[in-house]
Length: 575
Image (cartoon, rainbow, N blue to C red; front, side, top):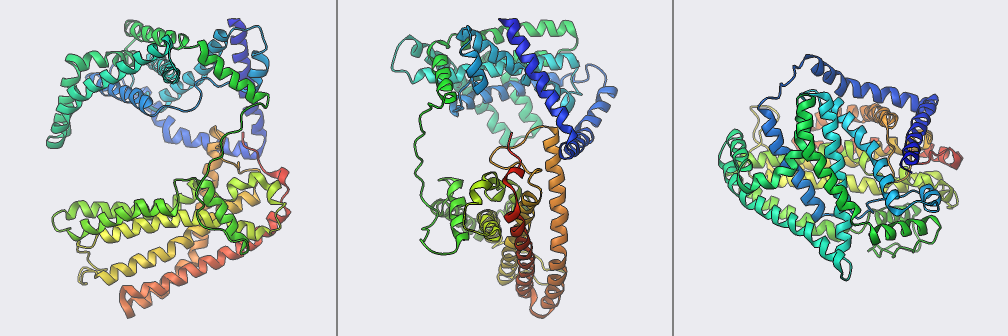
C-alpha cells in the first residue's frame, strides 16, 4: 500500500507540473512567468549564486553558536504561540476526490494518515530548496542545509499536528485520552515559565542599559548553562544538522533530530483513535453534501439602510458589512479616541521628549503617504471581489456605472480614514515641536499653518485613492481573464509576475492621471502661497481633488458601458 501511495503522490506532482507548463501557452501566464522568474533571479538568486561560488566552506565559524541559540529561542516561541493561539483548521484535510476514492477503498485510517503526511513532505522539501536558493549561501554545506532544514520543518509540522490533536482531546468529557493530552501542555507551560524566569528576566535589564553586543553575550551565557540549556536542547538539536560541515558532521548531528522526528510521529499516531475518525467523517459529510449549516453570524450594520435612496449606498452598506464585526463606527471611536487623546497629551509636553515625538510624527506621516499607494492594493472589498458573482450582478436593475461607483465607496472610506487618522496623530504629536518654514530665514510654522497643511493633505488623499481604485477595478473590467477574482489569491511564479505587471501598470496610469491635476494645482498653490501663505494651499488642494474626481468620473462612465457588455464566462475563476 505504501508503494501505491508513493505512486499516487508522484503522479499528482507530475500532473501538477505538466499542467502549469502547458498553461504557459497562454500569453498571460507566459508573461507572468517571465517577469516573476526575472524578478526572483535578480532579487535573490543571482547574488546567492555569487555567494555560493565565492564563499569558502566553514565560513560561519563562531556565528554557529549565535545561530543555534537565537534559532532555538525562535522555535520555542513558535511552539509557545501555537499553544496560545491554536490553528482552528483541521490538522489533516482531505479533498473531495480523496474522500470519494480513498475512504471507500480497503485502506485503514492509519494508512490514510500516513498518506497525508507523505504528501505534505513535497511542500516541506520544496520550502527547504527555496530557502537554499534564497538564503543558504552562508551555510557550510548545501546538502546538510537542505536535509537539515527538511528535518526541522517536518518535525515542526508533526508537532503542530499533534498539538492540534492534543488540544482537541482536552475538550473531551473525560477518559485516559484527556489525561494524556494534559501532559504536553503541562510540559510546555512549565518549560516556558522556567525560560522566562531564567533567560528573559536577566537579559531584559541588560538590553535596556547596555549595547547590543553586551546584551547578546549575556543572552548566550544564560542560554548555554543550567535549565535554559536543558530546555532549549531539543530546539538546538533541530538546528545543528542545518549547520553541519560535511557528511560525517551531519550524521553526528542528525540522529537527535531524527529521534525528535520519531517522537513527534509517535505522538501524532497515538492521537488517531477518535479524532481522525471524526475529522474524516466530517470530510465525508461535506463531500456528500450533508454538512451542517453553519451558524448565522449576527453583525451590527454599519449604518441604517433606507428603503429608498441611491443604489450606490446599498452597495456601500453591503461591502462595509462584509468586512466583519471588528470594523464599525463604535470600534473606530473606541480605539481612535484614546490614540487622539494620548497624542494631544504627549504632543503638549514635547519639550522633554522632542526627539521621540519627531520620530513618531514622521512615522505617522509615512503611513499616511503609503496608505493611498498600497491601501487600494490590499483592501479588495470592491468589484475585484464581486466580479466573481457577475451573473448575480447582471440581474440587478442597475447600470454598470452605478455598480462601479458603489463598489469604490467602501475601500475609499477605509483607506482614506486610515490616512486621515495618521495625519491627525502627526499633527497632534507636533504641537510642541518647532518646525521651520519653507526657507531657513522663514518663521516657524504656526498652528494655523500646520492645520492648513494637514487639511490640504486630507483633501487630496481621497481623490488619489479613488484614482487608484478606478485603475484597479478598471483592469478587472477590461481584462477579466488576467484578474483572479474572489477572496483567494493565486499562487506560483506566473501569478507573482502577473501581479507585478499589474502593479507596474497601475503606477504608470496613476502617474499619468495625477500629472494634469498636479500641474494645475501646483501653479495655483504656488501663487496662493505667496499671497496667503500655507493657507493658500487649501484652494489648490480642492482644485487637485476636483480634477482627479472629474477624471475618475469620466473613466467610470466608460467602464460602466464595458461592464454592461461583459460576459460572465470571461471572468477568471480562482484556483
